[in-house]
Length: 140
Image 1: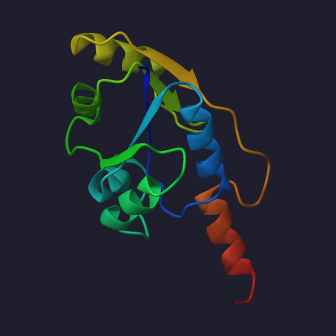
Image 2 (image 1 turned 180 degrees about the vertical axis):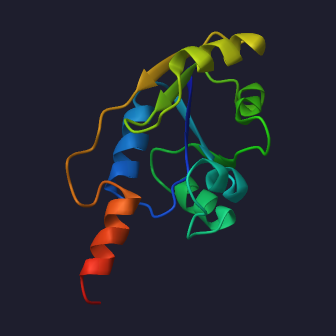
């Protein structure tokens, strides 16, 4: 069985997220999605609008996802020991270094393959920041 790990904040779910997770699922038999903790997301980008417990529940309800879990505090690579993936799927806009991921996996006794998933489309609905900007410009 090939286990795929995908990660993200998944703050406001949108078609880009669905595309990412659907493509990640195609890479293996089981898709485990790690949803970033609020504190980690805040350090990396910004504090999410949607609390972590709700985000992990929503991501877990998506069809391609076999299991959704909250990430770890501290060293984000420690989750590799828990999930033990064969493949790590990265979104087109995730700025992780694939060589660093492979090296962190080796430290934990894992032989990982890292795959970058294609972008959904150049759409106004393929990113959380784009959706927020769009909402601000339209009257509700």
